[in-house]
Image (cartoon, rainbow, N blue to C red; front, side, top):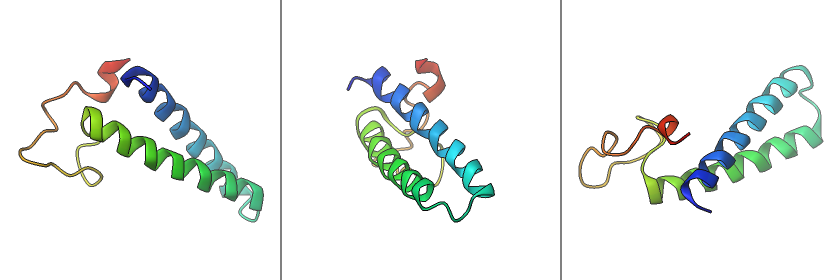
Length: 82
């Protein structure tokens, strides 16, 4: 996947995670929805790690470490890739 494809897939997974989160707020015992949510979260973590390893951090705190210097400002902002 190239950077644009990876970005698009991340947005899709984030949307699906939020959508299922809202659904589960009203249907907390739906096992199938919980399984789907957990699968999406797992895929989201993998793709986020892949994106950040290749293109830099997606968030400015708490989710991505800075290797040698403060690199958050060195790359285009995630929404500038659209």
